[in-house]
Length: 153
Image 1 (cartoon, rainbow, N blue to C red):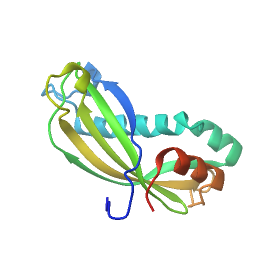
Image 2: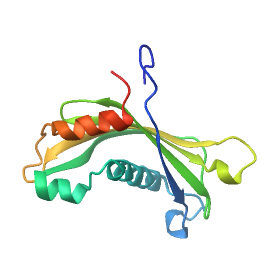
Image 3: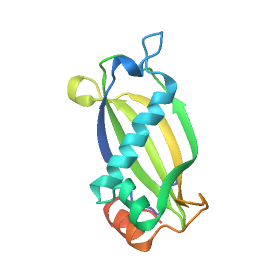
């Protein structure tokens, strides 16, 4: 994210505990599960500002779907680890939202600073729920998200 002439976006934090089902045969979190943890954090961010995805679909006929994901894995997490998913909004387009997400070991149970496990940039598209074609994000949603979480340009 280019921080020149921008204020840092507010971060949303979501805790995650690693369950046995999240791990692979090597005893570490299976790579695709980091994306699931990030999905939960994005859903909870929307919920925190009053938007339930099932209601958006039923009442407005829209859904949010992942358009693209760029993720880098830094360190593995293991069974029973406590993690923290940090989510911020780096950009909002007419029909898309760009999220910056990072997963850390939870600092609450460590004597060292948070250690980065995975870093990602996720583009979410707003789609018509029936045709799956791109649709503008309703202005009241953009306004609420911008007010609560987005400080960039």
